[in-house]
Length: 147
Image (tube, rainbow, N blue to C red; front, top):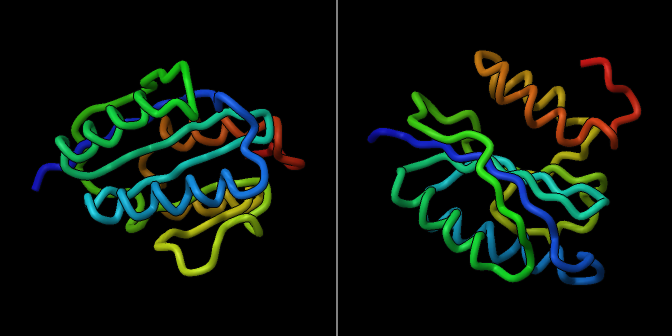
């Protein structure tokens, strides 16, 4: 099965407070699992999203289409896309400043921004451009930016 990847960034339309972010994560994790799409979603305190989606091309593009139509975010911009030789992520991961907002029992792995450099070194050692883009996205929120 040929794989495809798409990485985009967008901006939250409103602040994700209270139950808004956990609800989004629950909805996305279920949709991604059903479509066999893996990857990494990053959400920064200033309301930006970046996400890498990887899986079958039609599933990745269908999920991205839904994202562009979702009113909870705007200004979606594709940063990179194309054929992908193998998955970097075996499941769907979320990177947040604080993982305590993630509900238990979701089919996802949460890493805080401080753990992100180690995770990316493990899952994508042969994809330096991908690692650079993802780490650059969260760099203002890292206390130790020596990566």
